[in-house]
Image (cartoon, rainbow, N blue to C red; front, side, top):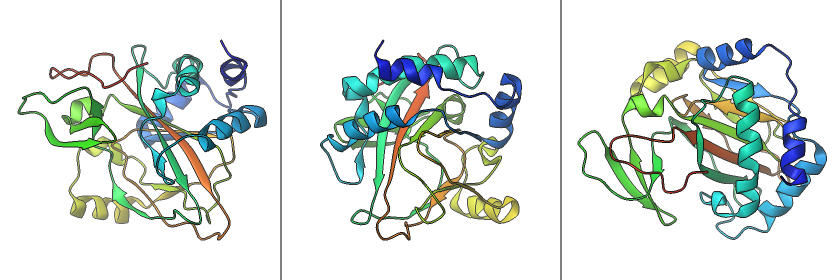
Length: 244
């Protein structure tokens, strides 16, 4: 195990009991874990990220890099210990989001409904097929989406001026939502702004409604590693395009 991976395991703080963490994630659809990674680990990840090819705004294919794959085992182990990740969970994607002065965007309110798979299959339960950065993506049934977990690692400060994620608490419990119903739910429940410091983690369910605004700091940047974990067998004759 590399020093980077080893320190990632050692530096997870636990401010509450495992059952409280798991219960909060299930009830709210998101969980913030501060100070998970130290400055040395964050700097090493950032150096790898800055050396990556791809669009300035990021890439969906970080798991193709050995340094990224090395993060999976210690991350998975600790999150299992905290009760927020299933025993059979595998990392099936890692996306880099890189918001900066030159690549600054807003994201409308939405749920994450697509997953990366190895090939197309004929199944009436599957819809919304697409092809991005060399991988097939599909929208599976809600039952599979409910078994997925997102882990976001922040590499930079993310203040209210850096376009942080805004989430609608508990919205992951309602299933797939139309745009009209999503807007109504946000009005009803309000939003939580997920600011962060370097080394913080945000755990969330893909069905959780979320959005972000453009960054307003002219010189700021926001780099995030967005891991997607799913069950070893997604069902419906599907295979993950990559699973670690």
